[in-house]
Length: 410
Image (tube, rainbow, N blue to C red; front, side, top):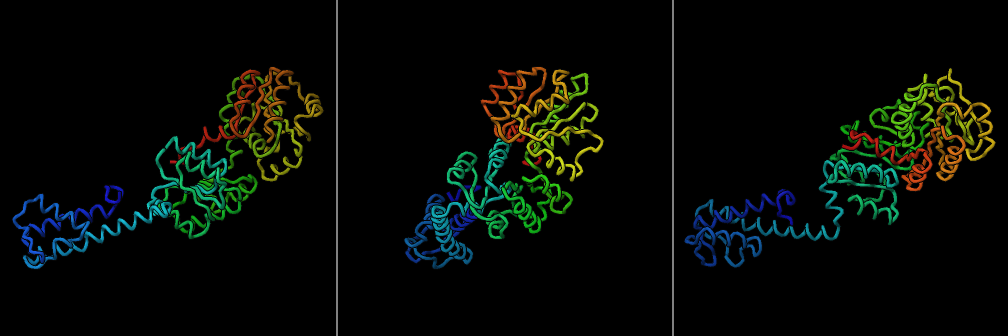
């Protein structure tokens, strides 16, 4: 396996060169200590004896004794070089069997390094493998669940390494200096930015080729003007999904309806906050009213306003409470007539069952409303119910995978 073109590298060329040296030495008429006279033999015999140098290193033939100086020199080089080359190939083969991962890492080039092994890594790998099925990928995390590691290795053909990706030892081992892209999808936001700083300090040529996910939207925005953030592509999955929901679905709905629309956001976490920001930025003239419902609606509204992400001239109606509580919807109906037009209701809490149950109840009572129910991963149950009851199913994972820019991957 070592001598195959494209796999053996320098050994392939060295083997051909030593083989030709042996043939040239035998054909020059060099006399051997065994008494064999090979000068009169043909090309085939000389090729055979030259190949034997790689196996028995000339022990049966004897050593070169006399002849032209160049012939003796070529033959001696073949005598020493051929067995040494064979021995090195055997040693490497043994080491590959003992530590195959080490040899795969040594040969990495133009590969993708992913830090983190959670659901985001699976989403990224699904998109990556659709676009490039053969690019080498290394996934590193501080620790792997055995089943998770097997899923990544067998399902996406990656190399899995356990360790701290911010350490120089592991950066060297993963051949980061020769990689195509570094994708930071870990769970610890501080550690993620720390790794980005270390990578970019050591390998400045990776500027613009580090993709960084930050779970805390507030933290990500607080660092948005930093040098490290400007050198990376930073994103938040919920923020990213919400942006694409507004631009690919809601703006089309607003253009279709003749009157100004009411929008109700059930749940005001990272997803709901970004939906509101995008609506105010891209459809301010289309909105009649905006309603926010959340168990911590007031506090979360204050956090968003602290970041100067909302229009101060836009009236927001904020209701503290659970979206599944009838009293909340009674208060909403006192402010907004849900029978007028086609109000948009987005149920985006982290409780998929609660979102779905509330969506079905709202659609039965106000069939004119455009009702979205959110899940994290794609849900067959939600899809079936959406089709049966004429509600809209939206998945954070699907919105992410369907809209992930190719520039973040290729």
